[in-house]
Image 1 (tube, rainbow, N blue to C red):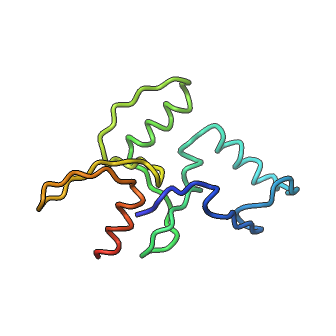
Image 2: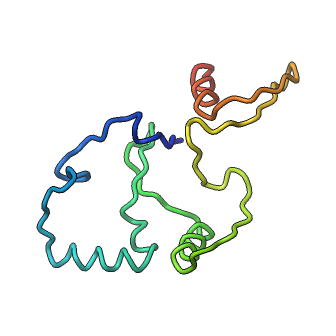
Length: 125
């Protein structure tokens, strides 16, 4: 499970491996230039560089489903897209996105943020 946080809430951690400071210079090797060119043309090639931080397993390579690859390729090829997607299919929400939940025992319906929902869920478990 991971959360998508707004950039202004968490300071950027600069380092020499992943995130360079703005306007810093970097000498690209010929291999890196080739990788950048391939990654800019093929999203399947680029995906192998995406990592997810899992609380249990640590840094994990993102392995999308085939339909997610198809969506990404269509997004890359076409400017306008319409996607009929089900819930819970690998999409992210902002922490302050409003969701509607229903208490199973009392029947009470609440509108809360997704951030509050996951914070309450962690406290209960």
